[in-house]
Image (tube, rainbow, N blue to C red; front, side):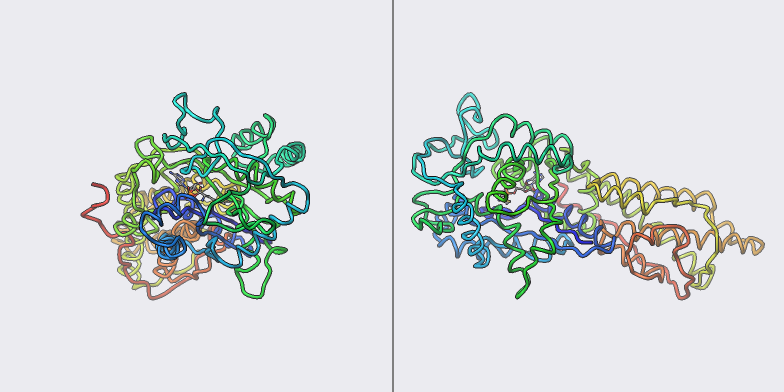
Length: 505
Ligand code: ME8
């Protein structure tokens, strides 16, 4: 069993913001979950360099575009590790391996008779890097996303015969009702296809920055015709001397936000069919992370630097907040003060305090030793592991975490109700106290495993503090998983109090 997940490759006209961190971190949660299932996983992220807007920023800075891209690729490459995400490869569209593959891919489309030369006369929004028809603009002729005036372009370039793929795409959507998730995004993509498809330009004339077309080097590939192909090209050179296409393309999943649905759910499958490849296995389209009900974006200027939030709260806390603050798949409003609230009440209190109290009591009342109590299930987790894993299979990142958190709250209620600090006052309660302490260790062990995908730094710390194996497979999320241990010491706070939430100001 294998699982391949991609994030969009991000434009490098600016540095990363919280929206990019969001997709990358949530992608990492999904990939870790599949690894917890025992699957062989591959996680791809990277950057999209050959955009007109990237070239313009380089010009403004007086740099050659490649030099500019080389410099700005550094903070982009850091984004994933700073979010505690572990991609297997970071692709740059200026990689030689990518450029070679794109030329081959486009040549296959050309040889297939799907590409022809024509004149494009119309609007182009550099913010979207997209050709726009008049119906796609506001009544004042502005781009509805960027609220800027698109440029008028008149040039001879090459078109892809997308219209010829309408029936095959409709058949694909008919046969595979889970090709795009969630369902309302599937419907959006299918209605767009059913509404009639128009051919689109796959090259740009007179542009100095991009991948030259193999059959006409005076033109470069249109940035989307170059970028989408990354999902396949990376598999041909990510691991030296290996071609991972057979292993991972059949299990490919694309994660993206709704802004680029059409490119991914319509154009890309058609391009693949034209070049003689299978379409991806599945696409998941998530919503926007909104701040004060506006999309957080570079162009509108209300950026939150994700790295600043991480500096204050730590990557695990930011991942946790992202998974919890907005129901994954929907749009949602986020506030930076929300990070502090979740940090205090849920991470520091519900989880961190529970571990501190548990380990402190074991150190104090039992000199660090916990016996295994067979068959005790005072806090019954039932099929928690199966339930949470099934939700994550379905990309329900928020629902899976809520299910786990419900169990965290139940364990907290249990310790309050049993009051082991009272039991410890009387030796007659020794057996009962052993059961309570074991139940806490056992519950926390199962919960740490269930939280591993979200809190990859914290989860092993919990298991280590409890003297338990750090193996994070889903079959360990159940009652009775904890082994007897000795040598437990009072654990340091997992989430120390943060007095100065400067990022929340
Ligand atoms: O579109 N909320 O790059 P891009 C949630 N290069 N997610 C957000 C977000 C927000 N406010 N803002 C950005 C491009 N994202 C192309 C992609 S892929 C072949 C080429 C995330 O830098 C989300 O995943 O504009 C969105 O789809 C992506 O960043 C757009 O990144």
